[in-house]
Amino acid sequence: MTTDQEAAHEQAEPVPVPAGGLSRRAKVIIGGIGGGLVAWFFFAWLGLKRNIVDAAGESIGSGILLLLLFSIAGATQRSRR
Image (cartoon, rainbow, N blue to C red; front, side, top):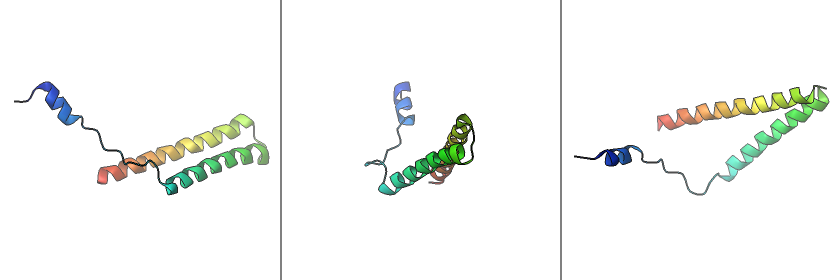
């Protein structure tokens, strides 16, 4: 017979994290996306003559949308393993 503490310990085992952090390819992709969002901000602000708050909102909103899509893709990929 197991105690409550042993049962809780068996259920709450952490998922192992890959050692070494992000790969070089992932860092380049993240940097490119970040640079693209900054470029979109300046293009919307200076090129399209939009208000600075509107340009920042477009850029930040686009970044949040990308984070949401990557999160859904990662959760879907993890559930298939």
